[in-house]
Image (cartoon, rainbow, N blue to C red; front, side):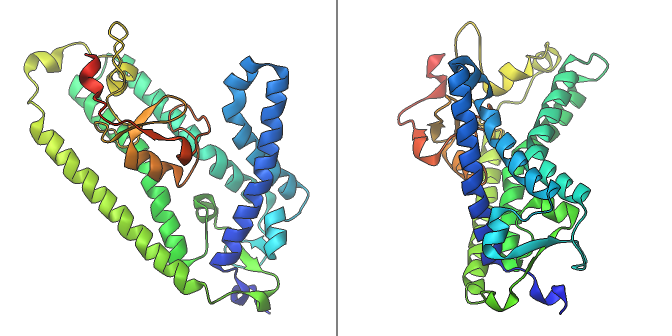
Length: 308
């Protein structure tokens, strides 16, 4: 029997991921409890690392021992190469796990480092710095939308649930192909179209808001262009050490915060932006602390500029 005709369906892959996340959460909780036992200071500094460490340990143990994950065993699926012929080699599997759970934070840190080096450079014109900074901001803000687009493609076409699997070409096949569920495909496909439509509407709304803000903003004068640049960490967050002004821009859309919402870690975001982000990953995009939708508070009658 050809493995191509027994490729895993959307329902099996999603159930496998959900099952794995339950066991990963148990490991994360154990690591977090261990930090609490050591000291509260260690927990405060390193608790955000418990989730990626738990994910990497869980998947690396299965790969290095030639085992299925508990989720894959539960749904009866295994990983195969891009040609559906043989098992993927360990290097490719390890690369997929590193990209999935460490690729985004590493890329974000790299872009932040590039912005810092760019601000400190004296060999580049201020106009060129602004263009490059805007491009880097655009790339960083695009991450949740790329994830949402990839998820909608999975719901529509199936195949690869994780972006890392798409980059490495790893597929899933169903061992017991006679148990494959086909009745849920239509529902997932409709969900994919709805998710894609929501993404398009969100992007259109952000674009219109950006155009309105650009039209309202004053044209910069020569003095403003040639003035010394403010450090980027303060410029983006709208912070002033002497006045204590809170951040005025959302770290996700890089625009003025609309419908101000605060996470449990204290950072401010747009209501829609933070909820779209938490659909993909339940960590703060700034400090990487674990946050939940139920703990997001929308601040009514709160004006950021009021502190000025």
